[in-house]
Length: 293
Image (tube, rainbow, N blue to C red):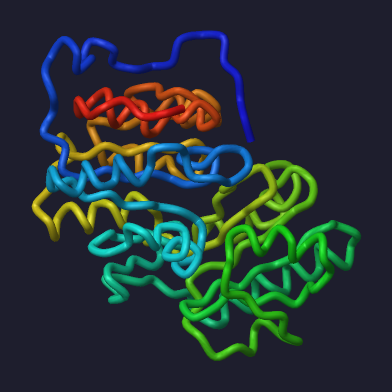
């Protein structure tokens, strides 16, 4: 969801690379929807050229998204070799088809959350749960408007009679709310905040995960394993599920269309997702050839 702001964000413009030279960036991590992708969910012009240039420089590019791994792998198929996919809001991290880490929910918690969503729907809320496993996403609601939203983020999905009975490691429960999730579903799931993360990840989405799982935790684990520092890390985000990730990098960017809390948290401001903001910043900061936009 786009946001506008009238006052300057809390960014550190004194660190403009034009004045201080090219930083030693080794890791670039970006959210997808509202950040890298435009409002029609398309990758930006020039992406594949930039990814090739980053690879030549030894810079690791990592998508970090609420989307499932299968969806990310398909989107980046032309350049997936060696790429680290931070999927399902950090609960599932995969490289070259090999799991690096995961943080599945307890089955009893999944059942409790699903029952809460069922009660919301029974009371008239236009909502549906997506139970996100390693192998597939699972839904009980099978009407076309709901499935159309599910398909955008979950290439692998199945309609089943009972999502609590599937045999899979469940990474998160996502809830799609046809109304504003921040005012509808999120308050209704507030009781789970005492033990788990309940994150508004988009205008219509709320995600529930283990407290130990978020994009930031996944990035920090990756930094430790690869010996990459926050000063060598660049991240981009636009919504509340990106907050913790911003804290992992000295080069943290909020998109101009970001949620106000993201803009307050980030050190820098990038052009909007509709203005090829991620690639424009990468090429400027790293001194790469300008991309089409």
